Image (cartoon, rainbow, N blue to C red; front, side, top):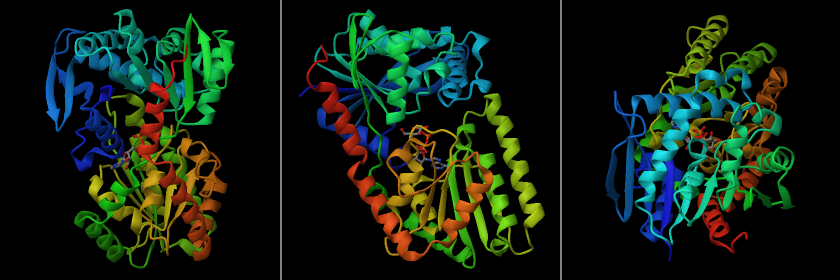
Length: 460
Ligand code: ADQ
């Protein structure tokens, strides 16, 4: 059996429960082949030389770990600058937030070259290489330039926007050309795949052989939509942990007379948080029976705080939630609990179980795993309701959720009300259908599906 090599910006220790379903699934795939996981160590070396990160080798069980440090300049330009200040906003349709002229692309290219050099020395001829996400788009092209002939696949965890949005990136042609160095490119949704097909058809005049096969620059690429899932059993097991059950009991006690609506995400402008708070305000205004009862718990964990757009968003959320509490709160009831902290992964299931409604209303999201985690741990006899943005990748799979356009504040408020009032039989029926799909298309299905497509017959 060939060895699997996973490359991602950050690597997780697959043995730790805090690692999450993706790390667990990749960890299992890596364990079975005695594989290698390569990525940034998470360490930033002040004043080091750009493009010269130290390599560290270690082990997690049978998995070999190889990590590289970044110097502060590479961290600034590759990670904060190009990955999170250009690619992240544009791929989430936010051209207004992209910082195109700061010259970050040099650092992005340099770090990809450095990763390729460090990795190439560790590769064996029959390795299968799986590269993850927008930080590493040009990695395969760099590896190929160094003579690597292994099969290389790429999975984009965030959305791919329509061609004219993508084309606003000054280096879009270089980025998209780099994708052709992969044998297989995976997207989260059919919509992303359709954008890719249109882009390469128009901008590159690629030969679109069929829905999944594209020829350009003398290379052939397969592209596929393969929605990422969660590890349902692992997450359900977590819901039986003491920490999770303590959390559930605490919440039930504290909010015994309330109906909880819950939002959980990283604090990010793609997640639609200001719109969600405005819709919640309208819920209280338009349906006053919720006053004294409906409580929104909004967890928004700190993320990329040194990027300006994130600091502004934090202020906006504090002011919106403060205003709702000031206008509607009572001595014994605060409508919004806004918490700018991480929740330990072991406690999350208990929080999901205590909520009557989950609000997953991003303006744009590659997939959104919170939606799936919420469904996975509901009590099938008395489940909560998922309110889901039609602009999350998960919306293609989760048709039985109550879907909303998060920009439409009053309809979102109406849908929150509908979710709060939904009868038990309707909740059960929707939940059953959602859970079935989440189980069928879980993270192991996703992982195996990608690897089968990657090692399948050569694209030609
Ligand atoms: P993210 O944007 O980080 O990931 P998401 O899929 O919602 O988003 O969450 C990933 C994990 O983080 C989940 O397991 C969730 O439980 C956890 N998490 C989120 N907020 C948390 C919080 N405040 N406290 C504790 N845990 C929290 C990117 C893409 C997504 C895509 C994933 C996987 O942006 O669209 O679903 O990758 O491909």
